[in-house]
Length: 262
Image (cartoon, rainbow, N blue to C red; front, side, top):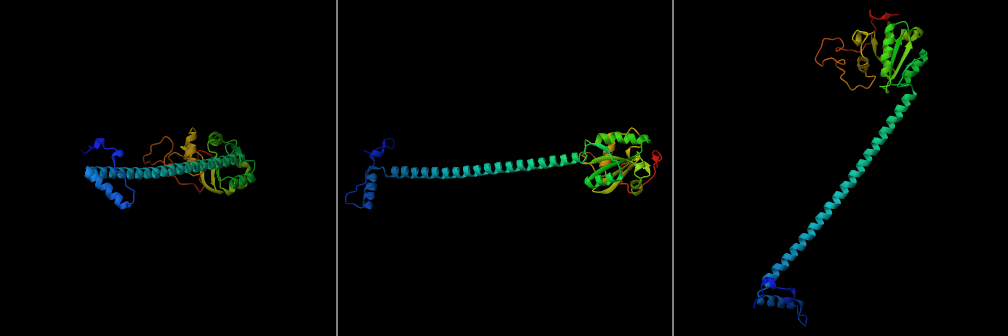
C-alpha cells in the first residue's frame, strides 16, 4: 500500500545501507526503494523545496545584514556630520562674540565724542566702518543728528558712531572740505565713501525718522541693513522722480541753504 503525503514521515524514509556497498550503490538503493513505494517524486520535491527555502532564507539574511550595515553606516555618518556642523556653528558663534567684545572695547555700541583730530585718525584706522558727525554746538540741527545717531549706535555694533566739534578740527574740516553743518562723514576701510550734508538727503525736514537716517547711512554700505535700499522707509517701491531714489554717493562738497555754513 502506498502512503499518502500526509502520513509520510522521516522515519519511513529508507536508510542507507552501509555494509560493503559503495556510497553510490547505497544512494541507488535508496532511490530504487523510494521509486518502488511511489514516494520518489514527493521526496525529491520535498528536498528541492527545503533547499530552495534554505537558500532564500540565507539570501534574505545576507541582504538584511547588508542593509543593516548600510543603515548603521549612514546613521554614523549623519551623527558625524551633525557633530561637525555643531562644532562649526559653535566656532562661528565664539568668533562672533569675540569680535563683538573687541568692538565694544573699541567704543562701538555707543555714540561718543572725539576729543581731537588725532583721535579721529585713530578711530578710522581701528574701525572698518565709521559714521562721524561734524557738529557745532550752536547749530540746532546738529542736536537732531545727535539724537538719531545715539539711537543707531547700539543697534549697529559693527560700526563706530562718533562726532567731532568742527570748530576745533580745522585741519579735518579743510581736508574733508566740510562747509555745511551738520555734515556726516561716512568712512569705510579708512576711506571717505560718502557724505550726508544737511537734511536734503533725509527728506528736507527736521522731523525725519531714525529709520530714514539709518537707511541713508546704509546706502554707503557702512552698516548692516536688511531693508530695501532702493527706496526710503515708508515709500512705495515703484519708480519715482524723488532725488533720493537717484542716489549717488557725494564726493564733492556742496552748499545747503537750510543748514548753517562755516
